Amino acid sequence: MPRYILRALGSMPPTLIGVLTIVFLIVRLIPGDPAIVFLGDMATPEELARVRAQLHLNDPLPVQYARYVGGILRGDLGFSLKNDQPVARAIRGVYPFTVHLAVAALAVSAVIGVPLGVLSALNHNRPLDLVSMGVSLIGVCTPLFWLGILLLLLFSLKIPLFPAIGLGDPGDVGSYLRHLALPAFTLGLSTAALTARITRSSMLEVLGQDYVRTARAKGLAERLVIYRHALRNALIPIISIVGLDVTRMLGGSVIVESIFVRPGMGKLLVESIYERDYPQIQAVVLVFALTVIVVNVAVDMLYAVADPKIRYQ
Image 1 (cartoon, rainbow, N blue to C red):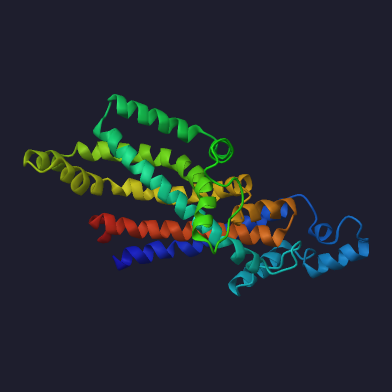
Image 2: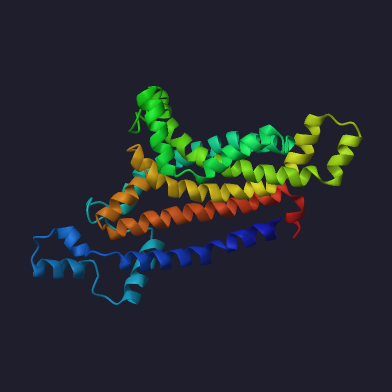
């Protein structure tokens, strides 16, 4: 078990270095001059040259990269060109809201997707299975922005159950949760469809195993057979989808937070791209990537909890 955990943790540094390098290079390929963004179109050539020197834009790429990595190792994510504040401060102000959105969406995905997949497996090739898998296929294929707009029109404008936009009052739990509901369901429903299909496939495979047939032959209650023997052993593929779900949710937050005008990392990234705020773009993408890496390492560790065989490999 400790060796397995060390292997999982050991995969983090190389992945993070690769992400740092890719983000650094991609940001440099984005059209636009950061000096012009910082000073505006009316800046003189002398002013532009001075800002480029301050931002070290005239240095060779290897020197810029070394300075960039060195700053991150010191905890310095840079200074926003547009907001005139440290990037870390801007991220700290919105990161919790994106985490709340992702956790709520993950809960929606699990609560809907796992039971639906189990029911489909138990009713294999019956009408319930065909209908649920047809609905899940539609869910997988439905664009996130279309689903978000549809839910907004239906449950905020047509049937005013939830607020249309905004964050609500974080100090008022009721208001905050009501503003969180539609964005969370938008993200959660899109991933619940995939979770249901993975759960169904995994359950069908496990239900055909000899130990399940033996448990039934011994007269165990069907509920015990399903939940204690079948579902528990079908968890590995379901757990693995959590890492993919988190990646999809962080990417989807860019769309969902823009649709519902909700402060968060996704909305901050969109604004940074529009404003060509290179330091902020780099920092937001880096935090996204680090979150995905940490979640996937945690998922790898959960494998060892769910499957004892992995602990001793």
